[in-house]
Length: 224
Image 1 (cartoon, rainbow, N blue to C red):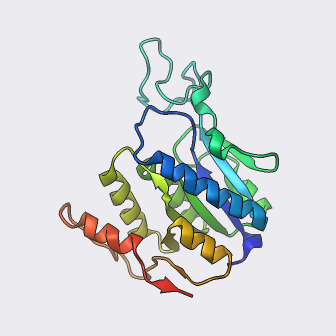
Image 2 (tube, rainbow, N blue to C red):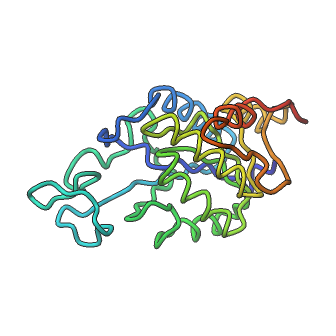
C-alpha cells in the first residue's frame, strides 16, 4: 500500500445525536486509533460535515423540519454540526462541508484528493446506509481504490448496517473490507485479513441469510 497515495476520509462523525446510532462509542474509539496511525504515517486526514442552513435554503427535498421551519438535523446554528471532540480535526487536516449525503456531491473533496495525489481511500463514518454508502459509490465512480473499515461505521439499526455493507461489497469491485486492527497491520506492512472478491454479487443474501453473508464479509482469511 503506497502511503503517499492514500488518504483517510472520516464521514460525518458529528455531535448530531438525533439518529440513535448503534455502537457509536466503539466507532469513535476505532476512528481515533486510525486517525492517530494515519497522522504518524503522514497520511492526510479528511473529515466531512453534513450541514443544513437554518433558514432551509438548499435543503434536500422534504428533509424533516421543526414546526419553526428549521431543519431537524444538522442545522448550522447548532453545535450538532461540529465534529465529535474525541476525533476533532487538527491544524493540517481538511474539513469538507456538504449539503447532500455523498461527500463528493458539489464539494471540493475530489479536487483536494487529486491535489494530494491520492488514489486510495481508507474510509469509515456514519451512517452506513446513507452518507457513508453514497460516498463509497461516488468514490468508486471516480476510480479510487477503497479500503472500507467496517468497525469505523454504524447506522441506526443493525439490519441497515449489515445490508449496506454487504451491498457495497457486492457492487464496488475495487472494495476491500476490513476492521481497524487489520487496516493498521496493512499500513504497517504486516500480514492482515481483509475481504475482497473479484466476482459480481459475491455475497448474495435473502432476509433470512443476511447475517450469514455479513459474517463472511467481516471474518475474512488472513492475506499478505
